[in-house]
Length: 548
Image 1 (cartoon, rainbow, N blue to C red):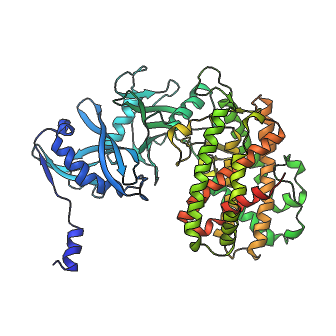
Image 2: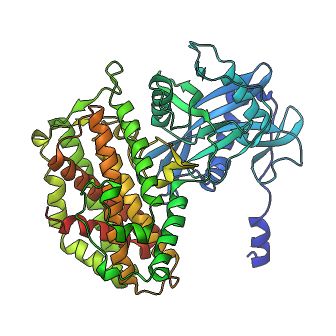
Image 3: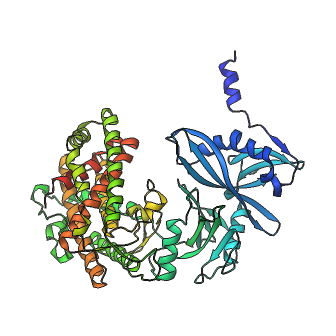
């Protein structure tokens, strides 16, 4: 029987070292290595990585689906496409590049496996940690042949004028991808969770900047992809311009809202006497009551107008393509209606189950709203079923798909839109379905709502008002934010003949998409931070209660 001390010692013991006689360049052809690496080592390593998305499921086994060389002359690395199978009978695919290093002092925290290869002792590591690998990928991209037809494909944009490699560094902590800054001018994003298709971020980035000349997204510079054994093009990495910025619009909005809520006391504002406005009523800035301008300031509304302008320009670019069928606008039809309802009803049932199973974790307003959510489930379900495509005259486009303030960079008085991968829960096929552009608008509106409530939660006690009064002021401000944004957006969209339907259709679609988004958000909050579930629940109730 082992003692606790012996157990602790065994837990921190270094992983067993393995010896292989063949050269590194042939290591993946060694069946013994693959068996050891996949079953004994990778299962443990992968589950500890930030980019691993299966933490809430039970891993069953890992298979090596594909491997390929990432090579320049005699310098060789391996790219692994891993299929992670789960006990719950589903699987995910991940990209892991590996390198062999013999330096004892290198990558002490990022070692995957100690090995001896052809008599040389060292470690297999995640190659992204190696500057030589990052340099190789950059150089292969910038020297790519225009029409690369090899299995491992590098592409460089015709519009990109690259400089020789100088330096690289990690961008920061991310969950689903790993981004590396090159020369302080470019970003290479290595996709970790991968799909058997071109990544939407790659497709949208290249289309917007190369085909349409849309300036307010990081310019597409190049990419790395692999043709798998089924001849499917899989995006491995995307290289884009590094946009100088002052952070994302989420942090910007939180700072602005903190000042706005502080003004309630500073300016002696009576919340109960602030003028109200109908939700979704379009507002020019001069139509915003002076009491609201005095409270919130003019600057925030000017910024919202600019964000609306950049959003409209994105949709104008996405809605003005008539050659590439992946981007040509389409009308609503029966197939879309069936797809939409099936998807949303499945998601809604999942959220109902989550709320029912976690009701004990809620208290106060969140518990009251969750109970109301469950009581009104048939009413909410009916809203999702009440989608009749024959009454809709607008068009569907490729859209951002996961548009919120965190996907927007602030640069001076301007905004840059990024990260076009789509909703993390959606399949790769669903992310490419053409949607009403108002789905993106619903996403950014929900983000406004989140920012207002997050400001109240994060600054508890900072404003000398009851929380209910702050919620009241926040809901009021939210309507003015929406109104000013909507006025600018709709004006520009219609001016460029993008068909988003008439007023009644627009409001129906906005409510529908905002309800979808709020129900989607509810799953994350119930699982991660139940005390914030009040935000999507309040959003759901507000939409359901609005009978207009």
